[in-house]
Image 1: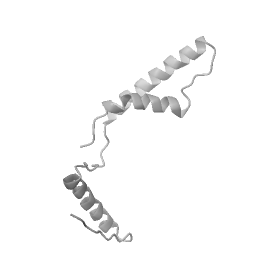
Image 2: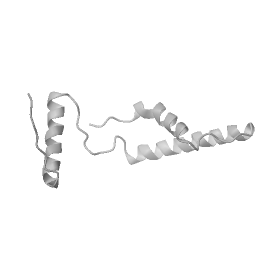
Image 3: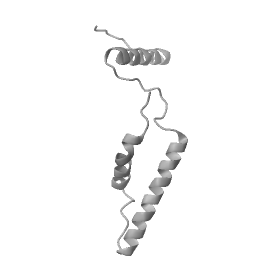
Image 4: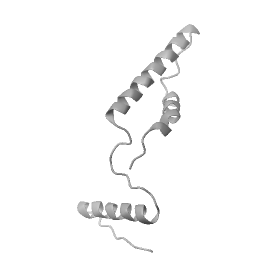
Length: 94
């Protein structure tokens, strides 16, 4: 099935309706789940993750002090690696 949708960018309600139609079509024909707008994890899960991140940073700080180096958790690389290691454990959006 092919469909052409014309979108009027000056019509906010029309844009929302178009988004709903596109999500329904993706779900039905492409087996792509639509994003519900909800987080993939809850507030408690986020708090636990931040606490775990803090503990990891503390460990790195202690290790850096032992060898008298600057800790390497202030950049984006450490944060990215930390999240990459845990991405699969996050609940999938419905």
